[in-house]
Amino acid sequence: MERDDALALLRRYVESPSHIIHSLATAAIMKKIAEHLGEDADTWEIIGLLHDIDYDLVRGDMDRHGIEGRCILIESGVREEIADIVMRHNHTLFGDYEQPVEIALQAADSASGLIIACALVKGGAISEVTPRTVRKKFREKSFAAGCERHRIRMIEPLMDLETFFLLAIEGLTGIRDDIGLT
Image (cartoon, rainbow, N blue to C red; front, side, top):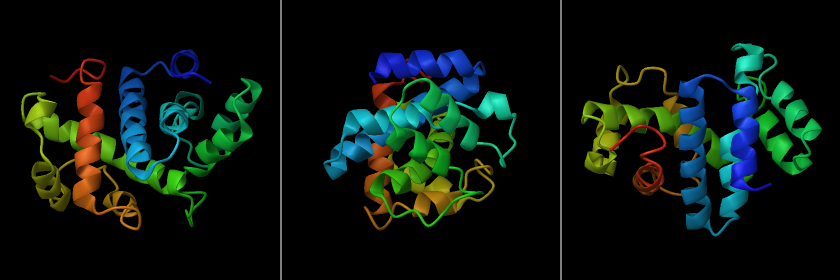
Protein backbone atom coordinates (compact mmCIF):
# COMPACT_ATOMS: atom_id res chain seq x y z
CA MET A 1 0.00 0.00 0.00
CA GLU A 2 1.27 3.43 -0.93
CA ARG A 3 1.08 6.44 1.40
CA ASP A 4 -1.61 8.18 -0.70
CA ASP A 5 -3.77 5.04 -0.64
CA ALA A 6 -3.35 4.75 3.14
CA LEU A 7 -4.25 8.40 3.60
CA ALA A 8 -7.37 7.99 1.43
CA LEU A 9 -8.37 4.94 3.47
CA LEU A 10 -7.82 6.83 6.70
CA ARG A 11 -9.95 9.75 5.48
CA ARG A 12 -12.72 7.31 4.52
CA TYR A 13 -13.06 6.19 8.14
CA VAL A 14 -11.80 9.12 10.21
CA GLU A 15 -13.59 12.46 10.03
CA SER A 16 -12.14 14.24 13.04
CA PRO A 17 -9.48 16.74 11.91
CA SER A 18 -7.61 16.26 15.19
CA HIS A 19 -7.43 12.50 14.64
CA ILE A 20 -6.19 13.02 11.07
CA ILE A 21 -3.47 15.34 12.41
CA HIS A 22 -2.60 12.82 15.12
CA SER A 23 -2.32 10.04 12.53
CA LEU A 24 -0.16 12.15 10.21
CA ALA A 25 2.09 13.09 13.13
CA THR A 26 2.41 9.51 14.36
CA ALA A 27 3.24 8.40 10.81
CA ALA A 28 5.95 11.04 10.40
CA ILE A 29 7.56 10.01 13.68
CA MET A 30 7.35 6.32 12.76
CA LYS A 31 9.05 7.00 9.43
CA LYS A 32 11.97 8.79 11.11
CA ILE A 33 12.41 6.04 13.69
CA ALA A 34 12.42 3.39 10.95
CA GLU A 35 15.03 5.31 8.96
CA HIS A 36 17.18 5.62 12.09
CA LEU A 37 16.90 1.90 12.85
CA GLY A 38 17.41 0.79 9.24
CA GLU A 39 13.86 -0.57 8.98
CA ASP A 40 11.26 -0.22 6.20
CA ALA A 41 10.33 3.45 6.56
CA ASP A 42 7.44 3.31 4.09
CA THR A 43 5.74 0.43 5.91
CA TRP A 44 6.26 2.02 9.32
CA GLU A 45 4.78 5.28 8.01
CA ILE A 46 1.70 3.40 6.75
CA ILE A 47 1.30 1.75 10.16
CA GLY A 48 1.44 5.17 11.81
CA LEU A 49 -1.15 6.55 9.40
CA LEU A 50 -3.58 3.69 9.92
CA HIS A 51 -3.12 2.91 13.62
CA ASP A 52 -6.31 4.75 14.71
CA ILE A 53 -8.42 4.05 11.62
CA ASP A 54 -11.28 2.73 13.76
CA TYR A 55 -11.26 5.46 16.40
CA ASP A 56 -14.35 7.30 15.12
CA LEU A 57 -16.14 3.98 14.59
CA VAL A 58 -15.55 2.69 18.13
CA ARG A 59 -16.02 6.14 19.70
CA GLY A 60 -13.28 5.60 22.24
CA ASP A 61 -14.38 2.08 23.25
CA MET A 62 -10.99 0.64 24.13
CA ASP A 63 -12.43 -2.88 24.25
CA ARG A 64 -12.98 -2.63 20.47
CA HIS A 65 -10.22 -0.21 19.42
CA GLY A 66 -7.64 -1.89 17.22
CA ILE A 67 -9.77 -4.99 16.77
CA GLU A 68 -12.21 -3.12 14.53
CA GLY A 69 -9.24 -1.43 12.88
CA ARG A 70 -7.76 -4.80 11.98
CA CYS A 71 -11.08 -5.85 10.38
CA ILE A 72 -11.24 -2.63 8.33
CA LEU A 73 -7.68 -3.11 7.13
CA ILE A 74 -8.08 -6.78 6.22
CA GLU A 75 -11.32 -6.02 4.32
CA SER A 76 -9.45 -3.21 2.52
CA GLY A 77 -6.70 -5.57 1.39
CA VAL A 78 -3.99 -4.37 3.77
CA ARG A 79 -1.37 -6.98 4.61
CA GLU A 80 -2.16 -9.03 7.70
CA GLU A 81 1.20 -8.10 9.24
CA ILE A 82 0.24 -4.41 9.24
CA ALA A 83 -3.33 -5.11 10.38
CA ASP A 84 -2.04 -7.15 13.33
CA ILE A 85 0.30 -4.37 14.45
CA VAL A 86 -2.58 -1.89 14.26
CA MET A 87 -4.73 -4.20 16.37
CA ARG A 88 -2.03 -4.83 18.96
CA HIS A 89 -1.19 -1.14 19.42
CA ASN A 90 -4.15 -0.85 21.83
CA HIS A 91 -2.09 -1.09 25.00
CA THR A 92 -5.19 -1.54 27.16
CA LEU A 93 -5.80 -4.95 25.52
CA PHE A 94 -2.30 -5.95 24.50
CA GLY A 95 1.23 -5.45 25.76
CA ASP A 96 4.60 -7.11 26.05
CA TYR A 97 5.79 -5.35 22.93
CA GLU A 98 8.99 -6.88 21.62
CA GLN A 99 9.04 -6.03 17.92
CA PRO A 100 10.77 -2.71 17.24
CA VAL A 101 7.82 -1.56 15.11
CA GLU A 102 5.38 -2.15 17.99
CA ILE A 103 7.64 -0.39 20.49
CA ALA A 104 8.08 2.54 18.12
CA LEU A 105 4.32 2.81 17.59
CA GLN A 106 3.71 3.02 21.32
CA ALA A 107 6.24 5.83 21.66
CA ALA A 108 5.22 7.72 18.51
CA ASP A 109 1.50 7.48 19.33
CA SER A 110 2.06 9.13 22.70
CA ALA A 111 4.80 11.57 21.73
CA SER A 112 2.97 13.12 18.80
CA GLY A 113 0.62 15.10 21.03
CA LEU A 114 3.35 16.10 23.45
CA ILE A 115 5.56 17.53 20.73
CA ILE A 116 2.69 19.29 18.95
CA ALA A 117 1.77 20.85 22.31
CA CYS A 118 5.38 22.00 22.70
CA ALA A 119 5.15 23.69 19.28
CA LEU A 120 1.83 25.33 20.14
CA VAL A 121 3.38 26.88 23.25
CA LYS A 122 5.92 28.41 20.88
CA GLY A 123 3.24 29.93 18.67
CA GLY A 124 2.94 26.87 16.46
CA ALA A 125 6.60 26.99 15.44
CA ILE A 126 7.92 23.44 15.36
CA SER A 127 11.25 24.98 14.29
CA GLU A 128 11.51 26.44 17.80
CA VAL A 129 11.12 23.06 19.50
CA THR A 130 14.30 21.26 20.56
CA PRO A 131 14.88 17.95 22.34
CA ARG A 132 15.64 20.05 25.43
CA THR A 133 12.21 21.70 25.17
CA VAL A 134 10.49 18.33 24.88
CA ARG A 135 12.54 16.82 27.70
CA LYS A 136 11.57 19.70 30.00
CA LYS A 137 7.87 19.43 29.14
CA PHE A 138 8.07 15.63 29.37
CA ARG A 139 8.97 16.03 33.06
CA GLU A 140 6.01 18.37 33.69
CA LYS A 141 3.17 15.92 34.32
CA SER A 142 0.56 18.68 34.03
CA PHE A 143 1.74 19.64 30.54
CA ALA A 144 -0.08 17.61 27.87
CA ALA A 145 -1.53 15.64 30.76
CA GLY A 146 -3.10 13.05 28.45
CA CYS A 147 0.30 12.03 27.13
CA GLU A 148 1.19 8.61 28.46
CA ARG A 149 4.84 9.13 29.26
CA HIS A 150 5.45 5.50 30.19
CA ARG A 151 4.60 4.56 26.59
CA ILE A 152 7.19 7.03 25.30
CA ARG A 153 9.78 5.47 27.60
CA MET A 154 9.18 2.12 25.90
CA ILE A 155 11.50 3.37 23.13
CA GLU A 156 14.53 3.30 25.45
CA PRO A 157 15.66 -0.24 24.53
CA LEU A 158 15.95 1.00 20.93
CA MET A 159 17.39 4.49 21.53
CA ASP A 160 17.79 7.13 24.20
CA LEU A 161 15.02 9.69 24.71
CA GLU A 162 17.15 12.55 23.38
CA THR A 163 17.56 10.77 20.03
CA PHE A 164 13.88 9.85 19.96
CA PHE A 165 12.79 13.44 20.64
CA LEU A 166 15.13 14.71 17.91
CA LEU A 167 13.76 12.22 15.39
CA ALA A 168 10.17 13.05 16.34
CA ILE A 169 10.80 16.78 15.94
CA GLU A 170 12.42 16.15 12.54
CA GLY A 171 9.45 14.05 11.50
CA LEU A 172 6.92 16.71 12.46
CA THR A 173 9.02 19.43 10.87
CA GLY A 174 8.78 17.57 7.58
CA ILE A 175 4.96 17.68 7.64
CA ARG A 176 4.45 20.97 9.47
CA ASP A 177 2.19 22.42 6.78
CA ASP A 178 -0.04 19.31 6.86
CA ILE A 179 -0.54 19.53 10.63
CA GLY A 180 -0.96 23.29 10.95
CA LEU A 181 2.48 24.18 12.35
CA THR A 182 5.02 26.67 11.09
